[in-house]
Image (cartoon, rainbow, N blue to C red; front, side, top):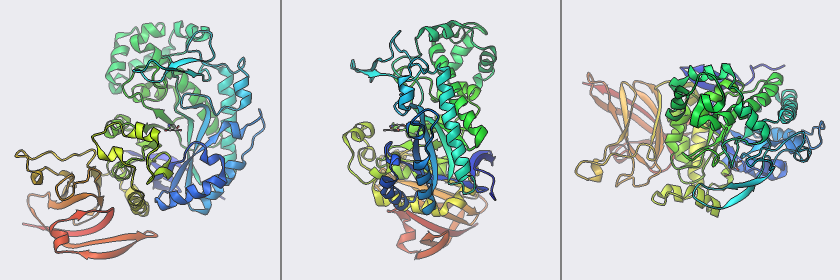
Length: 553
Ligand code: DGJ
């Protein structure tokens, strides 16, 4: 008999947190390369690497083509073995349902789906064509052949939902008791490339038809949270009418988002009816480009209100972050109070500091580098292109050091229960060199650069990055307040100082500063730090310190 409620999302301290076995859980995760989880044998080594990196969860594709190779014949051998592997290692899984969409294409749909073009139609980005050229970048004249399933395919969504429901039913039967699988991502990077909306005759007719009244009125009553572009279009448009009349210049994108999110919702709903695990939808970011050059209709932040209306069965929208503007993207995805769930991010030199920062600052539900087994290896040409575009920042040009990720990972994994308990409170904060670059001193003296400060009410922690004594650009520091006189500090490549934040007792002295580590949740103290190590508090490898202090007049 199952003893726990099934994994679910709850709001605690005004923050959405994932609850697993009745306790808040942080996914300190990694996503595997697309093909890895098709072979449990291949996965053996990948699980080991994840263990070394301190991960507690893996994000693993579960593909429609492998699960339903023939219509109506299901095969769950591979996910069964993957679940067994996770259980042997005390780890959890987020399955990624590669169904009708994978990176705005349909490459994981089974052969019987791909071949039945009549029943399961393709999207047309050029009238009458099932496959057509799409530009690969707004600035390049080159086009590549593109095809995907139509978001208007009524039989397609039925078939996908049926397969997904069968998959969720397998998970319920095989895993409800042990709860190895804690979240499911529905589809992967949905949306349409090559055009801002489908242009088949059926799509044109739908676009000319009246916008469903309930949707138009929902959009008009939710302008407060909208991005400026969408808000302006909604306010300038008619209350009722065709998509163009109601949504003006944003009509194509809203139309695509409406149909894509409805499709995803139908799939998610069918699965949730069987086994209601939390469900996520990940996103290929728009990067400020024009619709059609990114998967249009996917859950980019400017169409979240559309997704809210159409996809109530999706619990969280998740940015795949490969761009250098990390903080901007995290802020966009949390601006409406959403939890931060990052299923994919880069493996360059910010991978580890971002782990520390997202947990400490955003109280993230999930942080997960993509292809994490690449950590510590030289970049491939594609990674060098994707990650290293900002040639001025050394951390973007350098692969993440394996030992450093592992050290942060192990510390945070051990501390996870106490960190998760502090989610939604001011007791958990973080700063990083990437996001809180030091303000230069007025006289240009680097020693005088202003630190980043975390204020805990009674005391504050000031952190210096990129200083002459800590010149690295990939520092991060997280602080967990235990009481007015005690805290844990986790950090690397930074200098720290503690100060009183209470003007009545403006002085602060240390009682005890101890470095150490956690083993099986137990604190194992190492060196007692004092003298030079406390006069100049500096962290030069990922470390955890326990600090006790007092304040006085
Ligand atoms: C984003 C996709 O969601 C992943 O499955 C993978 O294809 C990566 N891009 C590759 O960078």
